[in-house]
Every structure is written in structure tokens, then in C-alpha cells.
Length: 394
Image 1 (tube, one colour):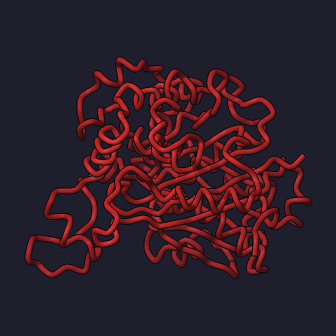
Image 2 (spheres, rainbow, N blue to C red):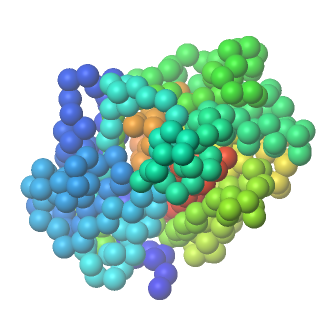
């Protein structure tokens, strides 16, 4: 069953908070939900499907449905890290097409700035039994962290294809050019390639400015049936394609660090939508690090493998300047990466672009086709890739 044209994103809301010492995670979820419902022109009582991931506290969806006073007939708490919320857009469309719900709410919220921690995974001390992830005992002893596993990908891509730090820096530069117009962006200063490559080294070859911001906050989306969409006096953003795919080292059988799961999720989404990368007017691309963007652009088909460095250079991602405007809110590199999970903000900004509601300085003219893509987990070990293609309905 295809989801093409079976559901619409009718509400989108990004919580303005970037540092939340005095507001709880459930409250951010609820305030984001209220914002998205209001944006759609609906009420909380209209919601009959709820989608969340690992950031939802307590018993996840069960706790949040009870906290927000929702009466739903469909619940989905699929977890693929930061890409979960892009994947949930596709899952919501599937549920709506199957008649499981007609108004789906997707929420994200978290407060990582209030509880700083290092590394990831579990596993305890060497030799100690653990109920952590199955790979922990094999990998954690080597000191893997978010930063150095992405650094491995960048280093390998440079070795294989001649990619340079200066080329990666252009991704941050483009994000900063967009963030200057976003009043809520965590970092609003425009930076240069030189400033990026001269910022302190974090995990060779990734510099400080190659890394995303760490922010509190959240966001929410409302996905509806066509019948509900037609009843609302809001611009209609139609979901026309979706894809998802996990990628990991497969016990050592796939150790190629230079590609991501976007190779499969992107193809599935483009095939279902019946469009190509060349048709896209705008791209929201997960940007936990600059290398994340470069590899995903290659794997989605915007350029050939190994040519990502050239593709992103010289302002090609800057709205009004380049051929592929990306992350016009400033993205995770400058604007917001709530609870270290940036997928929902990618859909939100794509919806803004398709509605013509992005900031006038970055709004893409005649934006009628957009892609939102994310990678959740770790690019250098295992991750889930999710792609959604949306179209403005006239």
C-alpha cells in the first residue's frame, strides 16, 4: 500500500525554548502539542493517534497520553534515535491510510542542557554482565563517543575521496547565514570557512564548529487524513513518499564508514513519490555534524558518492545563492537540536518552506517540493535513516 497523497501535515510547532531550567520535559511535550494543534486549527480532543520516541518520559506514549488527557485509538513509540520523528510522519500516514486514526500527533521534547552526560550506550565495566545494548561489551571498551565515531566517518571520507575540512566548513557557513534571521536560533552569528577550520579540534578532523548545538526544547506535528485536511483553513502539505532503513556494521561484515542508510530510505521515498532529487526545491537534512550532511546528500542522490565536498562548497546550500537551499532555520548546527534529536525540526522547517512561512530572507521562491531526511543513532556504528517527501497542494 502506498501512502502517496493519503495524509497531510497540517500542523507544525517548534518550541521557542533553548534552555529550560524551570520547565519539565512532559510540559514541553504538552506545550508543543498545543502549539501544533492550534497551528492546524484543531483541538486536543480531535487527536486520535499519538506518536513519540525514547525522549518521552515514564512509559513513553502511555504516560504522555495520560498526561495530556488524550483519547487515542492508535499509539506508536518506534525508536530510531533522532530520525524517529521523520519516520513517524511516514508511520502516521500509514496508520491514517489503514483507518487506524485520522488526526495524528507527533511530539519531541527534552532538557539535555540540565543533565550533562558523556558518551553513549551502556555495558558497565569490562567483564561485568550488563542489560545494556548487545554491542556494548564489544565496542564500549574502546571509548566510542558521539564525536569520535562521527570523526571516524569524516576521516575515512577524506581518505577515500579527498574531502577537505574547508569543504565541510561550508555546511556550517550556510547554516549560519540562515540562522542570522531566526530570532530563536541558539547561534545567530554568521561565520566564515576560516573561522570553522580554526575553531578548536573536537574529534579529528571535526572542529567545534563542525558540531551541532546542544539545546533543550521540543516540537510537534499534526498529520491528518485528506478529509480532515480539506476541512481546515490552512495550507495543505501533502505527504507523497516515505522511506526508512537501519544500517550497522553487521558484526563486521559491513565496515564501510562512507555511506549511510539514506542510500535505501531515500530511494524508497523518491520511488514512492515519483520524483527525483533534481526536483527538490528545498532540503531539510539532519546536521548533527557537518559530515552527516555531506554523506546524506550523496546517499540521497543529490550528487555522486565522493562528490559531496564539491557539492556543498561555495555557498551551494545557501538560500538565494546556491542550487539546493538547506536547513533555512539554521538547523542543528546553529538553531536547535532539542534533546540531541533533530528530526522533528527538519520536518517543521520543510513545512514552513512549503507553506511560504519561512523567514522572507530565506524563503525559497515557488517552493512546492521538499525533502526532510534524518539519521538517528550514530553514523559511525549503527543508525536508523528516515526520509519524507512532501508537496504543497495548490
